[in-house]
Amino acid sequence: MDKIIIEGGVPLEGEVTISGAKNAALPVLSACLLTGGWHTLDNIPNVKDVRTIEEILSNLGVVLEENGQTLKVNSDNLNSYSAPYKLVKTMRASILVLGPLLSRLGKARISLPGGCAIGARPIDLHLKGLSSMGVDINLEHGDVVASTDKLRGANIFFDISTVTGTENLMMAAVKAEGKTTLHNAAEEPEVVDLARMLSQMGARIQGAGTDTITIIGVKELYPVRYAIIPDRIEAGTFLTAAAITKGKVNIKGCNVDHMEAVIEKLLDSGMEIEKRGEGLVAIGHDKIKGVDTKTMPFPGFPTDMQAQFTALMCIANGWSMIRETVFENRFMYVGELKRMGADIEINGSQALVKGKRNLSGAQVMATDLRASASLVLAGLAAKGQTEISRVYHLDRGYQDLDLKLSLLGSKIWREKY
Image 1 (cartoon, one colour):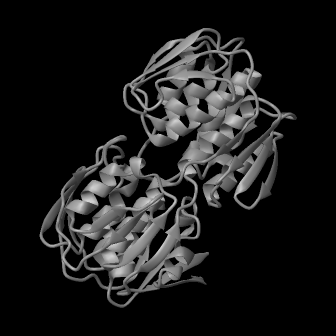
Image 2: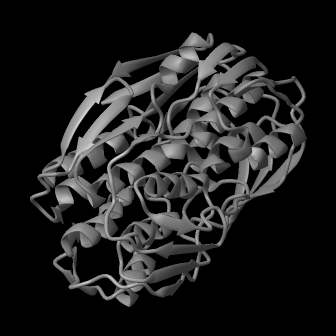
Image 3: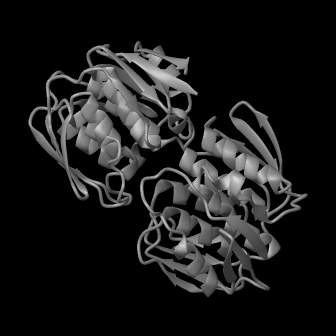
């Protein structure tokens, strides 16, 4: 396994280009199951989660041809409807193949998925919605076994906002008989990206990006060429890296409209952020202000940026309160930040952070994907050397984060252990 080592205290300076969004690529790849022919997908990020969904698709009979950041996908010879545990155990988003398989084959057997230990994230909302569309669902030996003679449109009400649930049911509905309406649908940019791709394939979708999405089923879909949106979480991580190192970074190829909540909080903390062309220039300053924040579904502050922002607050002036409202176990990384000298008190879903002038390098262990990024950010700011183990979590969602930071001047490298 790899570990990342950082010699902290170096201000970042230079230019970085943001990769395609992992959380947009996964549903878009799953949507290729809906129809045969060659899809061409551009701006595909080279991250572990994308490799995992590719392996799942390949196991189903899908042909994949990769050329750099472009991936060609053909499901003409779809010959299986099963995604076994050995393939889905590392990634909860693997459940996204359920809706497309039911649409295309009328049956699916998906092992209950795994992934980061940041909360329960149950799939009951997916299953409840599919059941209302005429799907017979059973749980057998840890697998979801689903079948239907015909998918039918339905009125579906989500008890809570669910991104993958919205995406799964949207894909199931595009060829269902009649109209499907998703109420309290997720509004995230990744949902809108999937809807845009499905629409180009011939689907009839209205309301993506709002809390009510309407889908009119069509008889046929067609393969398309489609480019994945930039990763707003990677862009937010680099913004925070500029702030925590008091550096200056030109962040290219990001969508500013997807990042307003993060930008607002970072501006409140005292950094400068200037929109420039298709990107941002981020300038960190010596005095970082303590800022309270609360995670919310989009367009609120994203839960996937909570850990990174908390790392910044560890060296801010004064106190800050971080409230997590999306996942119940998202503060698992706090003990590792405390090893670096952070002063954080956890009270249920809230973290009270007392900023300090400096953090100190230490040996720490990543607990999940975004926790990994927070420890990297803390290491960039800390005095001395930080060693981060279990960085395979980081590789699930960031393409070459350590290399990109190195090109910005940080003293960061990998070693085997």
